[in-house]
Every structure is written in C-alpha cells, then in structure tokens.
Amino acid sequence: MGCDRIAQLLNTDWQTEDVDRTTSVVAHIRSCPLCHHGLVFLSHALLSKDMLSCDQCRARFPDYYEATRPVYPLVAMPEQQIAEVARHLGGCPTCHEEYADLVLLSELEERGELI
Image 1: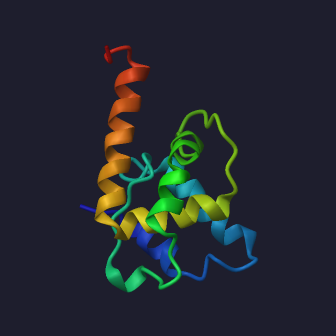
Image 2: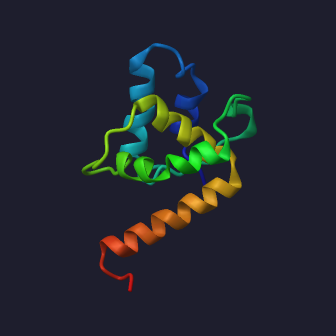
Image 3: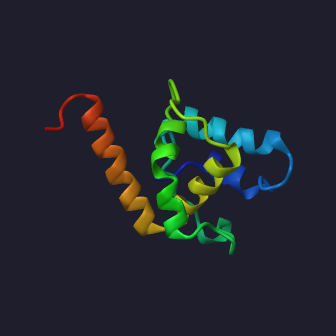
C-alpha cells in the first residue's frame, strides 16, 4: 500500500528553485499517516537517474528521522534533502528496509521498551 498524494507531489518538478513545491513534499511527509515515518513506496517511473547513492542516503538517516517527526521535529534539515531522501527510500529496497529498522528501534527506545 502506498500513498497516491506523495507520488503526485514527487512527480512534479520539485527539484527546482520553487520553494513551495519542496515545502509541499515535506509537509505531506510530516502529516500523512502513511508517510509520516518518511517511508514511501514509489514506482520506477518516478525515480530519477540522479538519486542519492545508498551511502549518501544512509548518512542522512538520523537527521531525516528527526526532521520528519510529525509532532515536533528535533532537527532542522533542508527541505530539498528531505525530499531527496524520501525519493531514494521510495525506490531502494535495501535503504528502505534499513530505515524501517531504524524507525522501529527508535520508537522502541522512545517508549522505553528497548533494553
């Protein structure tokens, strides 16, 4: 199951200088119950050739996790970078799985359930 709205937003030319387009992507990620962990599934048609490398994406995981928190983001991350990570996670199964594990561990730690 995926989110149609994030697919629509990322299908636009959000990588331009138009701040409103990038802001829309980030605002959606923070507010959508399907996307609020920054995990989105995208079709190959939406994935560009100039995506982040896996290493670049993984390096942004901690900030991305904090920056996409729906209630109170603890880290300020440039919106362009948030959108780039979301796009990479949408097409890279390896990074998607690693990020999902990070989210799970972080949530367990936040609830005090991690020993």
